Length: 85
Image 1 (cartoon, rainbow, N blue to C red):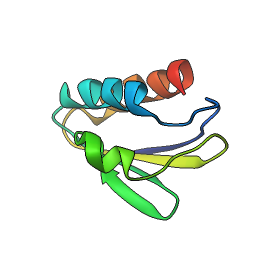
Image 2: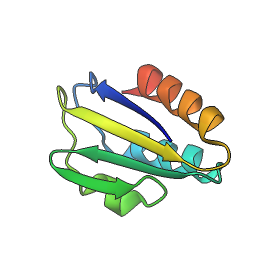
Image 3: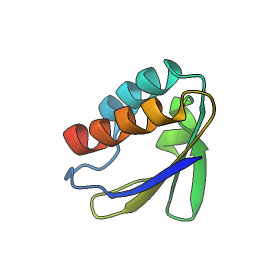
Image 4: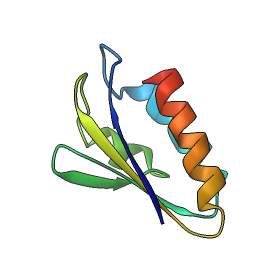
């Protein structure tokens, strides 16, 4: 299992465009990827669940990756968060 934390810097937070891109990225991996924030958790492969987290600027999110390709998935997700959020 790989896990990392990230504080959202985007002024709008995790809104529809980056959430959609995140779902696409996560769907490319076999691992189970869970995003947590604001006391809730969501499967990163489900857009509606991600949007329901209500992630705003300044929110610390935790990303947990478990599975066969967890190393590659965790690296790609960390880069995605840094570049887009």
